[in-house]
Length: 443
Image (cartoon, rainbow, N blue to C red; front, top):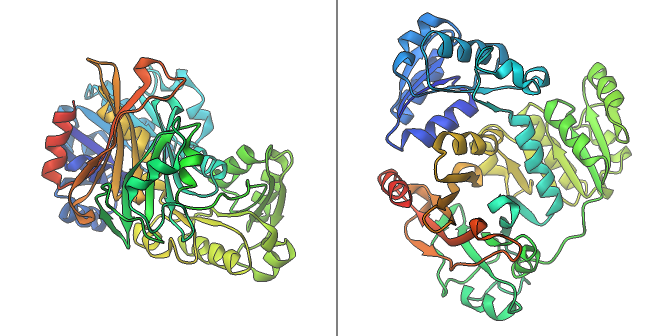
C-alpha cells in the first residue's frame, strides 16, 4: 500500500514505524527538515519538506498515486485542508485526519465527502482519556486493553513478592483458579527484555506480566501476581489542558478530583466547565502546594501537562510525598522507559496509546483491534477468522524483545455470542520479516 503521512511528530513517527515494516511504501511530509532526515535514516522511508496543505507539496509526495493519506500534523486546519485537497484534486481513496477541536470532531457534516472529506477522524485526547479512565478502574494495572467488544481483557501488571504465582512456574496457575475461571499469561517482560512464557517459566518479582481473561474473571486472575488495591477515590490532576480537562470530566462523578493548572485564565475557564472538581491555580511541582492539598492522602496523581520534564518532576515529587500511585504522560519514549517502575508507576506515551484505533482503520478487513504494548515494544491485535466466526488475540514483539512464541488455549466469554469468541491468544517475538509473513498468514 502506498501511504502518505503528513506530520513528523510523535504520532506521525509512531504510525510510520508501525506501517513501514509491513511492505508499505511510506512518504512523510513535514516542515522540519532535520526531523525528516532523522526519520528517513531510521525508518528507511521517503520524505518531502514543505507545507502539508499545499497542493504542490502533496504532488511532490506522490499523493496522486497514494492509496491512503494520513494527516496528523499539529494543526487541525492543515489536516482538514490536506484531506480536502487529496480528495478533490488527487482523488485519494481514503483519508485520515487528526483533530482536536470539538467543533470539527462533533460535526459529521463538516467531515463529509462534499466538505472536508475525512473518512476517519483520530482524536488523541479522547483515546487517551478513555485509556486513563480504564486504569482508574483497575488501579493495580499498568495497561488495560479490551477485545471482543469488551468481553475479554488483556491486563499488564507488575508481579510482586507475595503473589500466589510469584516464584512458581506458570503451569501452577491453573490449580489456583476455580474451575469456571480461565486465564492465560500472554507475555512477560523482565528487566526491559521479553521472555517467551511456557508452563515451566517461573514468574519473578518485578516482572511485567500480561494476563488475558474474560472481563468478569480478570481480577481473580490478577490476584495470582499481586494483592488487590483499594478502589481509587481521590485523584489529583496536574495540567488543565485538553487531556487534563477531559480526564477530570470523566472522573468527577465517581472520584474526588483536584486539578492544578499553572495558567490562571485557563484555571478559571476549567473551573467553570467542571461541575464538582476543585481547580487550583498553581505549579504542580511546588512542594508546598502539594503538601497543602494533602498529596499524601491521594490515591492517584496524574501528571498530564504538555511538558515531559514537568510531568516527570511532578509525578516523582508526588510519589515521594506519599501519593499511593502516580502516572505521567511522557512524549519521549526514552524518558518513559527510563522512569517507569522507578519513581513513576505508569508512564504513558500519548502517541502509542492514540495510534491503536488509527492502525485498526488502516489494516481493517480481518483486524478488529490494534493495541500498543509497553509504549511500542509490542502490538496486540484482534484478528477475525471469518470462516469460523472466531477472533484471535495476538501479541507480537519487536526484534529487541527476544525470540520464541507461546499459544494460550481457546476460551469463551460466558455472555459472548459465537462471533465474539477469542481463541488462541499468542505471544510472539518477531523480526520485521516475520511480522510481514505472520500478518499474511493470519489473514
